[in-house]
Each structure stands twice: as structure tokens, then as C-alpha cells.
Length: 193
Length: 193
Image (cartoon, rainbow over the protein chains, first blue to last red):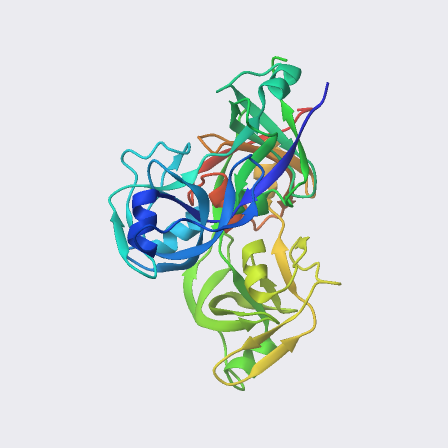
């Protein structure tokens, strides 16, 4: 069976803790949903903030909700050049040893000591979809993209959860490098299966 | 035998005709070499110009010399969003049907009706290197990159010329998406060889 997956391309964005939401936007503030994302319960927010690094600023960076345990800034390698930070390629939430940056909102600022990462590409899928594909949580697969800029990505992490919906997440540079458009279908290829 | 190739990562740049050099910088002007590039006779210039599209401007874009028959602007997909043009992925010199842009220099402007492209990745090699690798001019190969962001690029064009020096050229988004650094070694993989 062909293991086909739609692609979602992520531009730079921020996840905030509720405490940082209130420091940046005011006491008691809650984020305003703007558009639902592919994973149930996740949404892009109306709110944007500036991210300030030692070398430069990324203005108007979109916040994704809901609030999380810990704030996290997901950028591309090129965004890192603008900020003047070398952000490591990491899975979401794996922030130890990553560089920090200053977040500037309309009501306040937060100096993060860590949390700036380039997100590792990964595939969300539900338990049922994983069973259908014969894959398990945390498995590493290859993904093939057709086209003039076609390529096969190594080291793609599979993340399985009953609440996930089938979607592969890559960042803007990965998407552009592969000639991908949002929603385009790619194919999981496993050497041994 | 392993077919190993060093990588050169290209940021946005411009090649100019001598006529456009003179319109932008003044009558009789010649480009000023700043740094030699990997291919013999090619150089980065001291001179930079602004590229203006319908939506925005790329400021201070480096010119590469020497002057060519026809002006050509090589950008990334993300640069195309800034300009507001959808530049096609093309081999160098294949400009028919590509969008134009305005070039602004210190002494004048040139409105290009075509010439804005995203350069196709390709490998330069000398006749001797091609023989050693068992490859021929215009052959299409795959190229494997190791690492956390490892991948295998399809559709990589081989360009053979007695004056070329072994080097694979990718653009900044391809380089960042693959976690590449300038000068890093990658491997040509051919299914049938």
C-alpha cells in the first residue's frame, strides 16, 4: 500500500506559556484564535510579537495556540542569520541548550534564556493511520517528494497519537527547497517494509 | 568508487550584460572583482544593486562577474515572495517566459522584461573528473547528503567542461533545508552505476 501524506509548511512562529502571554499582552489576557491548524485543538492566533536577537529583529511573528507549558520560538536557518543565533534542529519541546531571544509584545517583554529552535520535520498520524501504514510512534522514515526539485528526506520522525491527524510538517526552507505547496501529497518510503 | 563532491551554496545574486552594467553604473564602467568563485574566471563583485518587484525590494544584491550576454537575477523562492514574483526553477541562461524586475543602480535603472529565476541545482566538473566518475555532460544524477537534515536530491544536472572545477551548486534554501555548509562533501548516487 502506498503511504501517502499531505504536507503542511510552517513559517516562523511562536508558542507561548500562559505566563509569557500575560507578560507580553497584559494580566489575564488569553490568545485569540484566528485559524484552525491541521492538528485538532491547535490554532493560529490573531496576535503577533517581535523577536529580537543580538544581530536583528523578526517583526510580526505569528503566535500559535493554545498556550503551552514552555515558550518556544520556531524559526528557519535563514531567520537565525537575521537574529544572529544558531538555532539547533530539534523536536518540539526539546529546548535544553538552545539559544534564547527577547520577545516583545504590546504590553511587555520576555527575555527567553532558551527556546529558539529549527523544528525537525515530522509526520503526525492517528493510531488508526499508523496501524494502517504499519508504523509506530517515534519511528524514523524516509519521505519522497516528486517534481523538478524532487528529493527524498531522511530522518523523518513519525508521531502517533489518537488525537493527531495525518499531516507532515516541514519548515519554509524545506518546503521551498523541495518545490512543495501546502497540502501537496508526498510518500513515505521505508527500506525494509 | 565513491563520487564525492564539495558543495557551494549560492545566495541571491545578479549576472549583468555589459550594456546593463553601464546603464546602472555609468558609461564605460567595468565590474570590480571582490572574490574569486569556485569556477575559473568567475568572481563576486564589489558592486551591489537593488532589485524591485511589484510587491517589494531586495536591497544590496551582489553582482557576479564577468559580464554576460544577457542579464539574469537568481533568487530563492522566499526572495520571490518579497518581490512578488513567481520565479521558475531553471538552468542558468534559460530565461524565456521568466518574470522580469527592475534593477536599480547608482547611475540608472534597467527594467528587465525577463530574467528572474530560481537556479536549478547542478554539479560542475572538468572533463577529467567526469571521466573518472563515469559521467557525461547533461546527465541527471541523485546526490546524497548525510546528517540530521540528510536527504537525497533527485534531478541534479551534471555540467561538464574542460574549464570547470568540481563543485555542486545549490541555493540558500536547499543548503539550509539539507543542513549544508559551504565546502561540505556530498555523494553522487546513480541507481544504475
